[in-house]
Image (cartoon, rainbow, N blue to C red; front, side):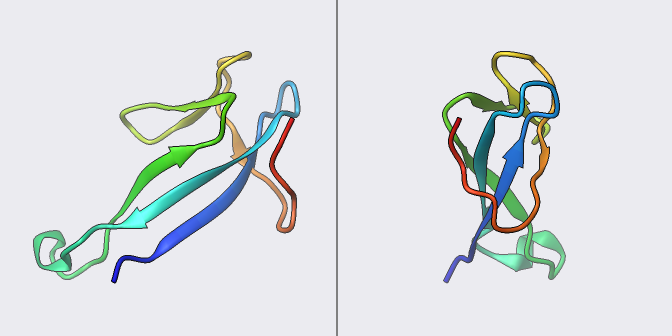
Amino acid sequence: MRERFVAYVVCPKCQKKGAAVWEENEDPVYQGGEWGKTLTRVSEGFRATPSGQILCIDCDVEAVLAQSGMRGGS
């Protein structure tokens, strides 16, 4: 079963809040025995780059992980 991980993010410039979801890759055999993670979703107002960065669409600034317990939304 694939595990899903959620992290809250915030834009350091405009303070917009959101969330990002990563999922484990299906088969660790192809990852050298390691479970890799893939960024699968980001909240509205953010976008993911091909390299896995999460950017605020208004500021074009990389989001940072928010403190635990912070709720998404703007």
